[in-house]
Length: 352
Image (cartoon, rainbow, N blue to C red; front, side):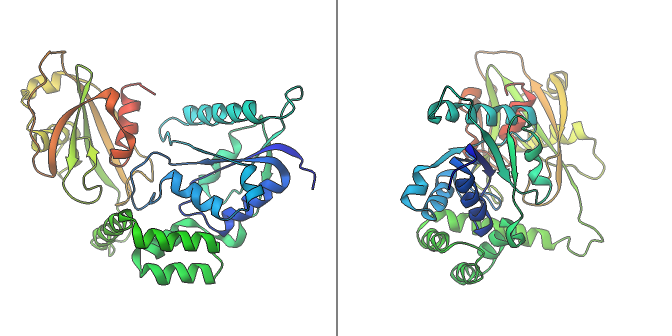
């Protein structure tokens, strides 16, 4: 058939890639010469919400398409920017513009670009952010959602869960085959499964509450001489990942006091309390609804900037921290960092 558009753009997380996603992909290929697939939540560590890397998700998609279709599919990773929608939009625009420049076959004519997707819930807000492009709205095929598929996979017998999803046509057969291989061979499956089970047990403690609780935490972004103070988590969730020193606020504690207490307990930072208090530059609240797998958690973060010094203060991991370490800001890696702490640092220090 003759395609209406030069490029169709489909943005999603595909955790995992399911039959509803495949319907949109095929419609995009029908309506456009090339389909641009932007794979969101890229460059994150494995966790209950993001079990698969962007490379693994691309492999799932391509396994469902034939050779000709794959030549018309352009896949690129897209990093989240949870506290800066404008930057996220700019990243999408720049990525698509780059692909259009590289792949548009008739440069003397402006490329016709369309954003394709469905407005299933609040996560489809991005469909309104690109008025310069055409829009292709697709009905949500059988109201399939990736969230219950993930829960079914990691909270039950995985082989049985995968077979059930395939038999009910919730996931394409090639994805089922891919997931079976992932479960059997990838250590990351056990890692995520352990975290899912931890979170499930954690949430059972407040299931009898009249409504789901909202937790209040504090985190410290301590910076000195181009380094930020991080701790390596000792236990789930996020075992082994690097995190900001912080924790839950006690019932009779002010936020700033809680932050300094947690900072002391987890890093043994050798800086007097008056100096720490006097070095607080600003504070900010981070409240992305999906920032923590444990439940709705709002954190109050304090930016503490210590005076430059050729020698960084001594630190030592304590309490929930396996170790504490000063990390150069240029060496921060979102794939090794807990929850949204990488994005908090970028936002609070104004480096995004």
